Amino acid sequence: MRRHGLDEHILHGDHTEAVGERAARQFLEGAELPTAVVAFNDQCAIGVLTALGRAGVAVPGRVSVVGYDDDTLSRLSCFNLTTVSQGAREQARHAVTAAVERLDQDRTEPREVVLAPHLVVRGTTAEPS
Image (cartoon, rainbow, N blue to C red; front, side, top):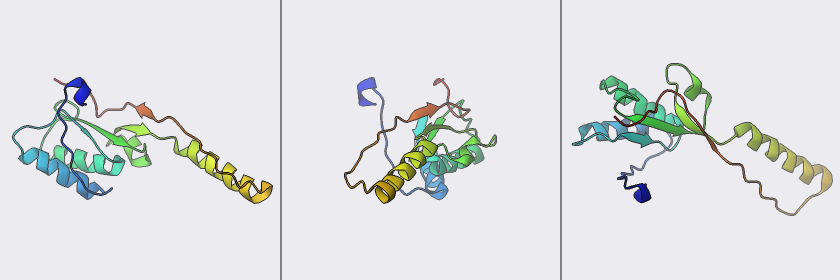
């Protein structure tokens, strides 16, 4: 963000919708809304969407919102959340394969598998206006 001349404002919390709502309320009480919010996970992003919607803030017209996880709620049409997918099915496949190798083939050496996340663009992001 700094490299692109963008301001950052980090709010700490947990992984719940309530924290996302609380963060959005803090933004709403501030002097100026951010153009975009990147949330810790989809649950927090849904909380942000909820609070912004209640306040009448257009998403993505005024604020873009992005989550992380690509969970089933993010795919619902009422949220249509842009998110980062970390390939949960592929993670599960690798985990099961590793467990089977340890149990059936006595593999003891650690193995690292790196999966590239990818952006799933849906309806909560747009160019800044």
